[in-house]
Image (cartoon, rainbow, N blue to C red; front, side):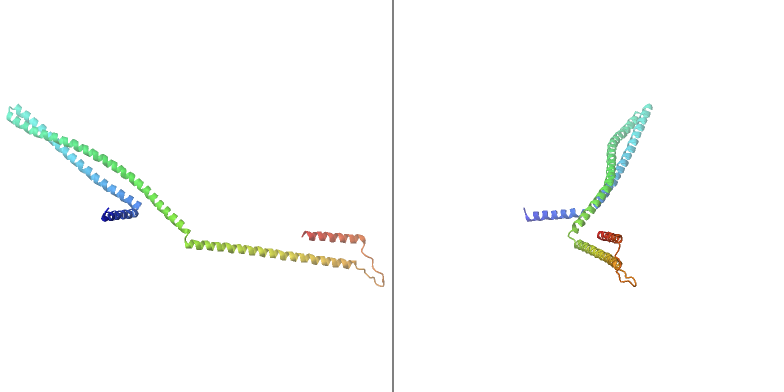
Length: 257
């Protein structure tokens, strides 16, 4: 293989690759429909020209047929007048027009066939163009949707290696850590607050118990009467039992706290 052949093939390959990459389906569809419409206009012009030619041939054939009949009538008139020479001339003219009419009728038949063929081709092309227009809109929508999906997939796949996305995820983790520390601090503060209230409640109970004991000890001291040196009698047994029961009940209440 020669150098120039290889170079030519390489240039064609690169050119085809560039053309393929540059092809926009939406634009190509639009251009294809435009080209078909231009072909439709040309075909309509061809059909119109063929129909005009058919009409012209038909008029010429009708005129030739009319002259054929006229010269036949003249030949008959000449024979009735015993003018055989004029009849012969009339028949000669009639033959010319008869051959012309026959030729024109043959051309007219051929032209009518061509016109019918062109009309069928025109109808078929119009149907294809109508179908192409419908498909064009659908294919354009599908092509645009495919391009959007491709762009979306490229964007999504690029998020994994995007620095902005990595920074966003890093900040998200930092916010979560801050929230966890704040929640832990709130829990610790709540626990400390509860212990403080418990201490307060415990101290009030202890103070109440101490006051109660002091009052009971005061009640149990002997009372000296004026002018008497004898000691006062102790608490009655029933009263002492009631006090002990009340003290025991108070202790049980404290234990339940």
